[in-house]
Amino acid sequence: MKPLGPVEIAIPFFILAIVLEMFWARRRSPRAYEPRDTLTSLALGTGSTLVNALTAGLVAAAALWLYQHRVATIGWAWWAWIACFVLDDFNYYWAHRTGHRVRWFWASHVNHHSSQHYNLSTALRQTWTGFFALSFAFRIWPAFIGFDPAMIVTVGAVNLVYQFWIHTEAIGRMPRWFEAVMNTPSHHRVHHATNPVYLDRNYAGVLIIWDRLFGSFQRELDDEVIHYGIVRQLGTFSLIWSAFHEWAGIARDLWAAPWRYKLGYLVMPPGWSHDGSRDTSDAIRARWQDHNPA
Amino acid sequence: MALPFLAVQLGVSVILILAVTLLAVRLGLGGDIRLGGEDEARTLARAALCGFEPVDTALDKAGIAALLRDAQGRVMLLRRHGTQFAARLLDSHAFTRLDRNFLTVGTGERHFGTITLDLGGDAQVWAASLRRLEG
Image 1 (spheres, rainbow over the protein chains, first blue to last red):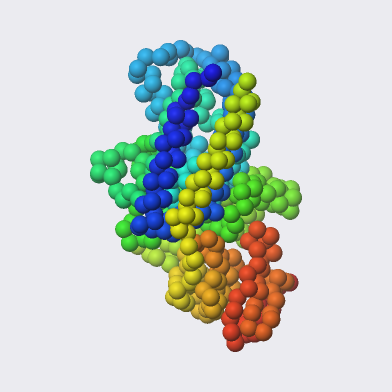
Image 2: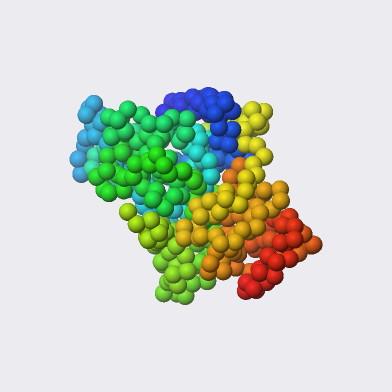
């Protein structure tokens, strides 16, 4: 029998934490959970696990191919684990940032954001189409420079497990030193918000330093009421529509657009349109800044 | 060997999902959320679409939806979605139906659905206003 990975080991704790957060919500914030939304989120998580299990072999084969053609051999020293983890978190940052800025990748990632709630069940609201979108390419390239694919998979799983606990409103702020370096519930609430000031900010996985370094950091503001979800809220709990709605949108746009604009509907930011009839997050933020000059 | 393990994993996951959802229901999470008034509807409309500044609002009597118009003549439908609200700008009257005080409004999006608002005497005024939209 295959040994359990970090995610499989964590699943019982995920469930326990969700149950505990539900009891917290009953006392403090009953609207933090909506049973139909929770059902959709958890079903998306289960579907994602299933798809990942079915496609893991192909991703592993691609990583192994890169490793066979590696330029160096890094091995299993303790420092290699730390280097691999930091490099993978850096890769996660850019994969995630691309997932918000390129519609092809956004179509895969959007369902993680399509809940209007922000609770621990939202963390499990994962994509079904990440493999199809080829998002894994961002994460496996370190095999080419000599990191063992098993190490890459393990640190990637630890990264995913870390991100579970930050999907909550039950925790306010962590100590200042922690908020400075690590991704936290406060930082990630900003990431899930649709408020113009928060759009496309805080892409970090574990280390928030990447956002600080690359200019995408936004701290949570005390006087800003957060609205979660996506700019154009789905307005449905449909599981299938949640998983595929943006792909359907891309297909509609590709069909309708003049030939010279078709590629734009795949590679430009979400909300881009060739006739300017829609809003990207940059356009929304610019309009908000016009209305709210600093 | 791998496939049966996957099937067991799926079966256990489905049972856990249903158990957690049932617990959320039993704990009374979610609830029957209504708009508290026109101010709340306007705040939600502003949040739904940056730059939308309502100048006219019609609130459903049960507080489950609202219609709002801005100075540019754009009309927004705000309707309950679970414990939150979702909005759409209306661009057609094709999915609008008036029945005395009740105005049924749709967007043409199957998943967004239609909603019937009890607007009292305002229903006819808003129906006429929506007829000015294309299509």
